[in-house]
Image (cartoon, rainbow, N blue to C red; front, side, top):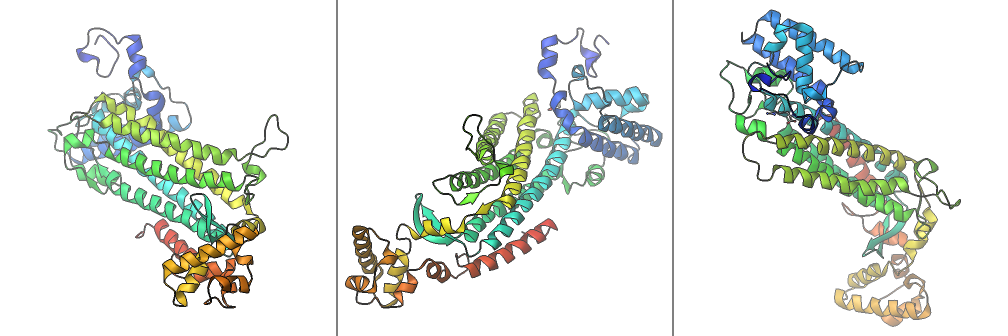
Length: 467
Ligand code: ARG
């Protein structure tokens, strides 16, 4: 053999030094090592059960893999870029440790179905991790929502004060986004959890393999239906990164609101000293850098999704080396989603709201004008006329430099004779929010009901129940 490569048989000369560095992936795909070892164990056991390798060979392979796993865990494993990737590093070490049986492990297998298997196992774990991180954030938000079920704040459209809402209701809207993120991950998991093992290089294998055997051992729900698709498909990575990209977009929206709310102009929330940083020049500053970073990192998540879509665009069947480029975006998407969720959960648990500032803000901008219009409608006026009438009341309030809710009954009756004493209650912030007392509404009662519902849904999802 003219080269030391595991695939060196047909080569006369060694690999160009630059090419060796260019093609190597062991510096990042070593992260798949535990999955690679699990896949090899399942494959060896299947080969032995099918009589393709002997029980003794299988035993030697399993013992060798155990030692390698330990070496890696204890950081004693010597990774070699010249061995290209995680698969060949482990296989070479196995052969060094156990000899001949190590060389039999790759029977009826290719790195193509091997890497697809590793990646699916990795993604499955990543989904479970992010799913549980999302549940933690949702639980933290629900605790705050419960505390702030009656806290009134301005609800905004076009970033203008629109109608008063309860802070608990606003936080429940964040929870609703996260609930969909969790569902998307669960759904994606079903398509991740399909075994490509046995696809071999692309066409399957002539050995009498039992694909169900290895699939079961690895906890897969089923085996893939087509070997060409088995080695080339990366939809599951794209789907996962699409779910994390959308999750990151949601987190960026929450982070943006926290940035706004913690500014002096709003003054709604204190993010806690542990979750803010200072300025190197301005001694007075307490900056929401954590929220800003969460907002910023969403760009990366979306970028990774686009990179993966472009990676697969136009790729002919079956496996192409392009696919090696799938790992870094995937790993980074997992790491960022995990880090953002963890730090945001911590921040949410620490933050404290300034209830009176929020209430004052909600009282500005004639925010209960719709309530007065609705009042007139209930007294028999057509909605368009009511809209017009209240519009003129707002004009009157503006001309006097006061809020609509501060006009006297006499002033209001000048706008419509239908307005009576009870309209004054309708114009209050509390009256406004408590009147929206239907499913999905902002009243404190509905907020408390929604919190209970969300808590039981999270508990059911954690048990793997229906979403
Ligand atoms: N490192 C490769 C990857 O990540 C493993 C598969 C290599 N297969 C091949 N035929 N060169 O995709």
